Length: 261
Image (tube, rainbow, N blue to C red; front, top):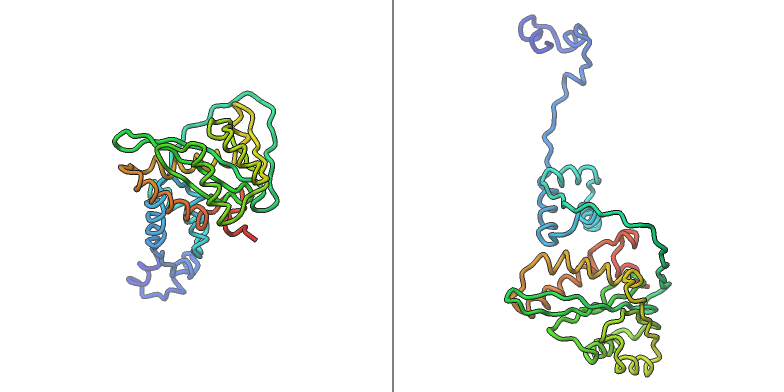
């Protein structure tokens, strides 16, 4: 209306706005197009490298990289790119008594060990021995091979002993490699407590079980591996990113290495 009055009746902008009770700032406003290309590039790069991570992992990684965007803007772009990860709704379980998981007060107090299994493209199976420090959730070692008997478990612990020393206690399940006499004697020789969880109670080893889930969803289910060398190479890359770049909600969105003294 103000533009029409200016063109046909030669009135000023001030007079036209006053005649129609329109603030001059409103008349002068010009919508600025949203430039989200940098956010789009960063989100696509993150989800391309880490296919299984969700929005909050993306957001806190961007913040750790020094990006100033708030979560609402990032989420708007995230959903516009249809990057939402669809998850099955969890079934409700009946109430049950929970056992509190011991929380160490410093590094090298308690380590947790566990195995996971997968297969290569040609059907050959392999195993992974995962070692985690319960204090800061740092992945200390991932050993990959077609067979990992008790002597290989001891060899991994010997390597860790040389590089960072041994903890006061190791938490394991009741697998045959962990209940072997060889491992028991080695732990006694090194004054190390070998703590077993109760059979059928994986939640008593929750830290390493949570790690296993991350490895499964972000690594093993995300890539096709043809050789053990490919698995080992990708595993080391994932391990470095997990320890140095990935923010953990349980750690206040800090990385494991940021909690080291």
